[in-house]
Length: 356
Image (cartoon, rainbow, N blue to C red):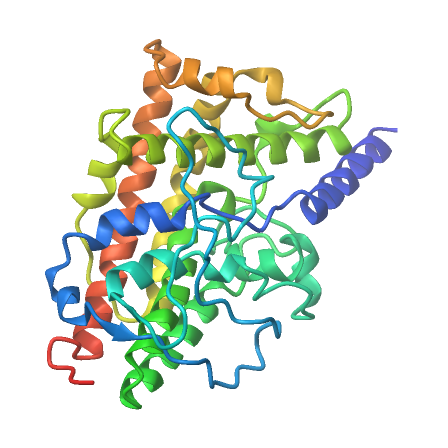
């Protein structure tokens, strides 16, 4: 009887890991990237690049229509709130049409979100992709070596390192061909995968406190999704309010004043960030439960309301302070990852000496 109970639990855990992962990471790569690049003076020489048409053959991505600009771009007002699980993924990017000009800083911010725009969806990559949210999750999540995950615990799992390297190599080819626009756009794509690793839900497949004992299958799956999306929604909205001058610039300072590390390659950087992210993830999830409360436990889907958000951002209790400190560490890692990647690209591609 005990054996059957244990076996049922293992099967339930296995099924949960197959269906519980979500493929999206930070809600607003664009906003956070814009704060990191604003202080990188070496990018100013690329302040007026001509937008060129996509003429590259990349069979590794879903074949979708390339987007260059959003003529309906409009930022949210300070009193508005959105849930990341529901918002239109392309809603906030600006860009410029083919033939117009754009700065490298604007391009890196706008298109650091691009890999979430269906590039990695509906692909057959590996039998293990079912354990990471299908093909998009398999490319945007990376479980580092010696971490607990299904189906091959202890071994690294996911294609994020390879995807970061893939688009970096395309960027290198573009710069060699004198195509600065696509050089930086491919860098923005590569950067996305690096940044994803600073998000705890992309380096940790499962957390024990999310188990719903009353409904261990659907309840646990929904619990993971609920906390994942409320975490991203909260941080994305708070970061936006800081940029709009409605809140102290705590998270902005975290991403701007982080320090880079030495990098051998985009692939090695992804693994470095993922390891750091994973070992901090239990604290992130513990403080999230303490801050958001247990109302996000399954089995039903629960999202943060506008009223709860504007109440929560002004809390000062111990649970709120612990959560805020952990979020600052997360955003510091995001800034470190971004700066490390761009500094590596500057040196490796000799962009200081580059002439288009």
